[in-house]
Length: 107
Length: 121
Image 1 (cartoon, chains in turn green, yellow):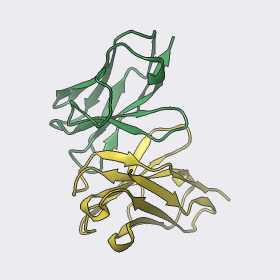
Image 2 (tube, one colour):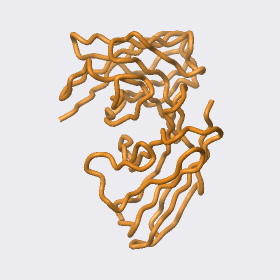
Image 3 (tube, rainbow over the protein chains, first blue to last red):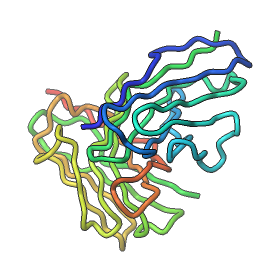
Image 4 (spheres, rainbow over the protein chains, first blue to last red):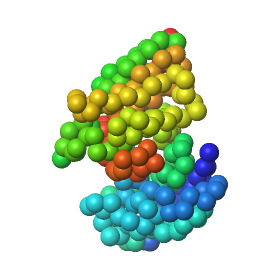
C-alpha cells in the first residue's frame, strides 16, 4: 500500500498567517495526489487534485505543490473559516489511501 | 446540484449483515466511478470500495475484502454496499462518494452526508 504521512499533526496559527502542510508518500505517486478539507460535523470537501489543480469554487488562497513523494498544501492568509482537518489522498494505486490528517487550529 | 443521499445505516450485532444504499442525482450517474469511504468515530478516512462506471471493475480495502460487496444500478442512479460478517471495527460513518473519472483510480469530488453503521452486541 502507498502510505501517506502528514505533518504536522496539529498546527496553531493566527488569522492572516501563511500555512504550509506536508504530505509524504511511501512510494512515488507521480502527481496523483488530492487534498481535502473537513470542517467539524461536515463531510470532506475536495480542495486540490493533480497535486496542484484547485477544485471548482476553491479560493485562490489554497495552493498545492509537489510530485513523486513530497507534497505541500499552502494556505496564504489563513481565514477563521479555514479551521478544519486537512487530509491528503493518493489515487495512483489501489487501495486509495489517505494521510492521517493535519488539524489546523486558530490561535 | 449534485446530491448523494445514503440510507440503510443502523445498529447491528457482530456477524450480521447490512446493506447501504446511495441515491444520486444532479449528474449523469453512469459517466462516473463511485466509491464508499468510511470514517470511524474520531478517526481518519478509509476508502472501503470503488466501482467503475459500468460496474466492470471493483476494488476493496483489505480490511473488508471477502465480506463487503459494492454494486450499482445505473438505471436507478443508485450505489450499494452489501456488508456481511460485520465486526465491531466496521463501526463508522459511511460516505457515498462520486469519483471525478470513469475509473476507480479517481479523486472524490462530491460526498454525501454519510450513513452511520454501529456494530455492537
